[in-house]
Image (cartoon, rainbow, N blue to C red):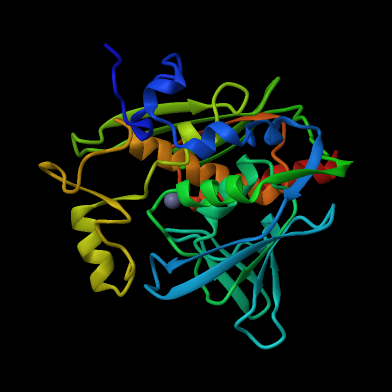
Amino acid sequence: MKREIHWSEARDSSVPMELYGVPEFLKVLDCESCILSSKQHTLATRFERSGIGLHSGELATVRVLPVAVGQGRYFVRVDLPGSPIIPATVDCVGQTMLSTELVNGEAQVRTVEHLLAALGSMGVDNARIEIDGAEVPLLDGSALEWVEAIAQAGIVAQSADRQIHPLSEPIWLCQGDAFVAALPSSELRFSYGIDFELPAIGNQWFSWSPHQESFRVAVAPARTFGLLPQIEQLQQSGLIKGGNLDNALVCGEDGWVNPPLRFSNEPVRHKLLDLVGDLSLLGVFPQVHVLAYKASHRLHTQLAQRLAYTRLSV
Ligand SMILES: [Zn+2]
């Protein structure tokens, strides 16, 4: 008898896709190979999504549009006078507490990592991201809706090549027992480890390469998560106003407050998603193996900055 598995619970890439009941568009559109191409890509057409921000709790609409080759990914605050541009690059990283913020002059945009992870990992090099607020919507807490929107819009190859840089020496940064590292590698790979006292999370490791498995299936569905005591504290401090049980997994001493999980190791997959988003600030992923353990947006973005500096000094 045919075994039925929900596609979002797919953990074993050796199981045929048919068994997961993959949504029709995932089968029809082939955007998986764009990340592996030597060419730059943009969207075939624009798309739009609205929702509330995790930290502000405010509603914002994001419209992502195709742009010419070499433009990169950049935000435009269409709600501010003069519609200032905020490039999604390592030079524009602002504060990195709980999410990654980009700043250019007076203009800022917060919680950019899930949308940028989706664009970067699907190979959308050039995109204009218009937003009418200061925070990217959290949607369901994962990158799934962004990935679906990109797949539905379609991706097109452009005339110029990507400038993909190899790395000659390892780079690493530590903070206590947390670290991030970039190692010379024959292909792009991300590996992540986390270690929590809460038994429902515990010690988890996950490794992902676009050469082996698609971001859409392996990483994009993993949702934001939080720990119950910390959430109460953050809410009392006026943070995570937009967080709720529909857009974030919550873990307490007795286990998950709002199961089921989409993967048994959904937390570490989400950390890897954040890492991909933060490293996308390099524009093009370098040819490296990125390794992180108990890291934060601060360490992720610092590694991206070090990689950018290394690239410039070659
Ligand atoms: Zn995240």
